[in-house]
Length: 356
Image 1 (cartoon, helix red, strand yellow):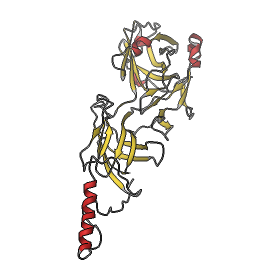
Image 2: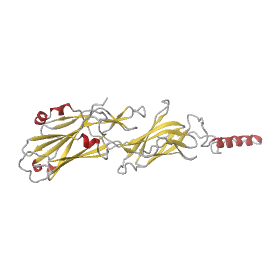
Image 3: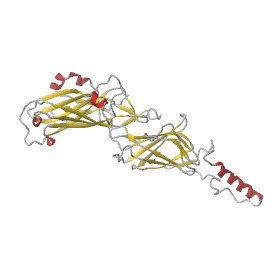
Image 4: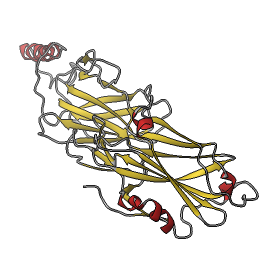
């Protein structure tokens, strides 16, 4: 957003007014010098015209998400106290850029704007800025429902894209400098970092707001007879308040494809994280369509593996010793060419239903 600014009279000694002869010129010069001296980092409060716009540089440090390479970042400034305009800017690339703000106090929220499946609500406030994805529906084979009828009770959601977010608290923009509470997750959150006079820089440290769940089934008996495979992971949060990374306490499920290589079946899915509900349980379902058309289904309680994972952003789930029905192996042994998202009586449908 390009904003036109009005030239401030007397800030840096330039354009202090028309030339006035004699003592009048000296008087104007003293006024200009006084205005410069008043602009110091020790000044507690300065009042500026509402039209005064100040250039602020937002710089992103990706040390908490080195793999991230977003096409752009959204930066939103919320006025502290709830009064005034919300300022939003779209910056290209991952490094940051310059925005224009009126002098004042803000809370800053930044997140990548190149996602395809993530939507937002509660965008009027810093604390309520909520990321979510649309609900989906999965039409399960009848034989699977007969084995695990609870599958029809799960609310499934579309997997979100990788999401990264950074914040800055207590941002104070003045004519001389910018001060803010560090948004570095590794820093003391109670500290205040004050920039030197003449510099308007906010350094932001985005970190992930989504997690990758990799599910691996090892030593699968009769794996070569599997033509197609699907997984569903339940007990996950369908949304996240991204400023403070607060996961929803409701429960959602995510369905995804599973591939096969020799005696191993694996698949992965992106989600916001495990549900915040203390009663939530995480179940992993494996559904295997065999070469003769028959379907085998399995369920595993993986709550311990998810909740005790050493890295909540990259969760590895390991299941050992699955035994599939013995059928004629697929020749050639290359199931990747046979996998489809929608096959036979199995279909995943995106429903444009907004999470309330």
